[in-house]
Image 1 (cartoon, rainbow, N blue to C red):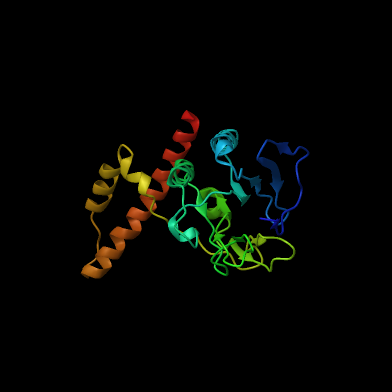
Image 2: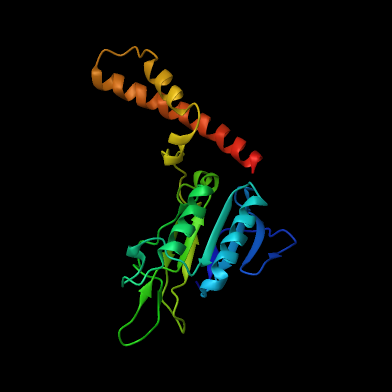
Length: 234
């Protein structure tokens, strides 16, 4: 990706943290004083350096447990739909997805372009190499965050623009069920105990709604505690 513009972001901290494939900077948004980290990446296009790139991504995530936005040219695809042909190295796709899942990252999809890169040949190869990922706490703080593509100018990559959506009225935290919860100790007991609590409703539909709302609240608090414990152990 040629550029990521973090709109409405202000107050860069003093030090840029540079690595082989990433540059990280801490940012404070002037509109709400939220501190977070921006990581721009340029992944290796060569197989012999991709493992080193993934290990650097792991190290980046281990060194900061606050809200994080990562974006750039990862030079990795996640699935067969990310490319216009079947020439895919599933080893690297699986490794990339494993890293995303390990850190519970959310991809902010670009709705305006199917692919972000092309080799500009007569029979072009096209792929999604550029993307924006966020931690769940940043996405919860900015539920209207979005990504859009702008026209390519003199490049084989499509620039992506990040908009935090702070110029709009904020909406409540969006509840998201995470698959990894199913593997955590105590999850099934929490669901069972929450669901078995009485609801003082007479209509079956109202009872169903009451139980779902209460379970959602319990899972929000539980997941925050589990996330904090996992980060401390790492």
